[in-house]
Length: 196
Image (tube, rainbow, N blue to C red; front, side, top):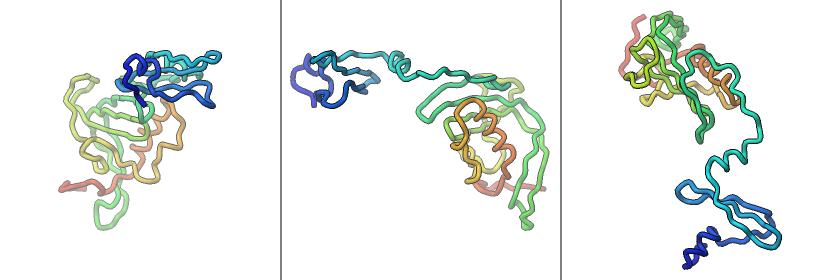
């Protein structure tokens, strides 16, 4: 509850006193933080930087482990950890199901262009590039495979769920393994023909 006194609003940003709590952290508009705490009988307010808030909640040591080849960037966002990995052009083996009337799985080894693979939280994205090495501003294209949405998001199926795997860079390797070993089907295929 804000008052009409601007100075009062700055000194008590939410207008609620500490009752049972010893302290509270206020998330203010514009990405600002205010720490309200009890100092003796007096309530005190202190504005904090995002870096200070982050440091206060990071009691664990962070170690990425050995970073796999091709990882070009990583960070943390609202969905969790994210990674960008480049896979150079290579022959890759894919298994396809339900692409003909027999329904039998078919494995094909095909030459693939360079791949930009992104893991963001539990969601994977994939794009193709003509580049043989990673270039930040290179154009990206839709990967010519089924099970990939128009925005590059991969439909991993119900049995491939990343949420049961620990956080960390090993999750990226698991996501790639799931993508490469999951059978591709005719989901998300619109007017695409496979000639086998």
